[in-house]
Image (cartoon, rainbow, N blue to C red):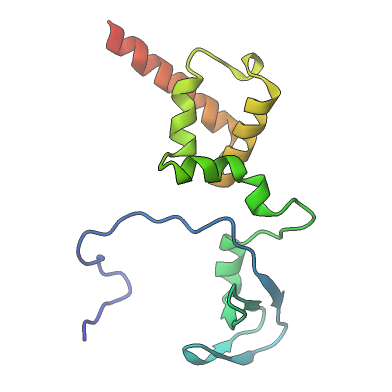
Length: 151
């Protein structure tokens, strides 16, 4: 059996993966220590940790700091699959919504686009947890790169 220390390098040729943003969970913060039988056996949760029900109906604890970095309350927003439908289309085609939109908008600015494109950019920024200013900065950078190549 291989053993790895906490901060060892990943073995082999690791690839980048993005947590699927279309799944939602049900969770509750527990005000005291608790234990829960998970698919891996009994696991302890500390004061303030979260108890979640996974997509297959299983219960599991989530550390409160990890939960705060990973999850946002879904609230009354439309379900994520509907809200991110434009992103799903890009991904199904093997494309990156952020990078693929930028070349289409070279020479444009926020005032030059229609409402549908504006909404698409807002959703893409939300999906990637980036600001619209980040997006338009990258459009300008791509425009400068393109001008540089034409010289």
